[in-house]
Image (cartoon, rainbow, N blue to C red; front, side, top):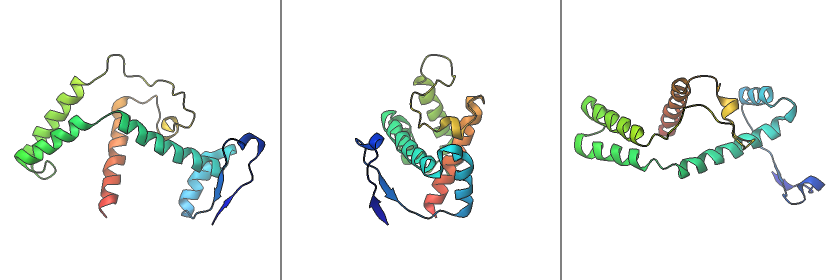
Length: 149
């Protein structure tokens, strides 16, 4: 069910749409817990907007070199997921690409001017980049496995 809300004075320029959808109880409980005073609707909106922001950032920061390296390894040596040699070749290629494209400066989190960025909600930014990267790798592997099923 979708209905248009009457715009409030603060929303005069940005008309909002009221929508209803179902979520599992466990997810609802998690959202309620993290939403606090903002409310669950606002928390859902923040997280959805952040997901689109993340996609936009991915488009800005091209991963073309890594994709090309993966395709080349697969073309020359087979699937790096199934072949130990192909995996070692791709791993070295990815490492060299990342080293060559590493920006100058210290690897410390910078304040994000976007208040809807959820990095500070999803991750403990006092943790080292290696730990946060491990968490992101886990998310990516899980998401890829879910996409296959």
